[in-house]
Image 1 (cartoon, rainbow, N blue to C red):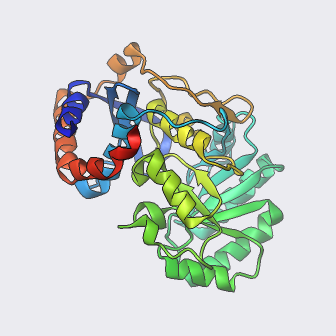
Image 2: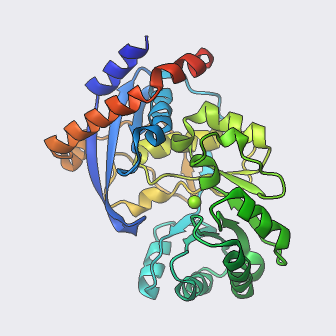
Length: 335
Ligand SMILES: [Mg+2]
């Protein structure tokens, strides 16, 4: 059965290239593969520098979306946060906030330069005084620097400081920060799970208060639910800068979780100039639905033949990194 899945993925494959509205994660063009199975459309979009081992969970998440039946949903409206890239211009910050109508939580990217980070955070606080603010460091601080920087941020935004996301790279450093922190700020882990060889083996006790779930790098909804149940931490679902198709699957994870107490980072369609379907934010929420890519958008955004061939090859290589074994392990539960 599994080779048939690979054939179906390749025969329905579309590759698109979407310009971003602002530089995010250092990129201005987002390349994305889409494919279709009996249960709908799915996305495969690991960042270009990821090797086949790191890309494997992304492929398996897409395969689950297209080839496994959906799980029952507990909610259909998902609260989302605004996502603020590392921009410093006040006018641009204001413009970006306007892309998220009704959102009452803002996530701010930091980590390159603390002075500029603090200024960005202060601007967001001034422009959006009633919002909760979370700050994402992507693991770039030492424990020492994190303790100092978190204090400085807390001085500016006080109790609006909802959590600090992945201030340091390792779980040991995160544990030290949590142990020595003097201000009431929660610590969330993201890379510590999605970049781990085995995310189930991460020792979260006394290190983390919240876990970030990203359905694609964690290998699908079923595996993300198992991981959340295993670690017993409150969760926030967040995107990997997917198109509407990938976002709709992240939204389904948020819809399926037993509990959802935080806004999710799933409004990131706003960071793209165009999209293949509609994931409109209304009143700070997005409605969960199955989406079909718009044919006109697929034509307009179509990547070159050369890039298409590169993605075909990438899918074959990623498949060879262990997809058949993965399906053998996991697809029993796809009934
Ligand atoms: Mg993050």
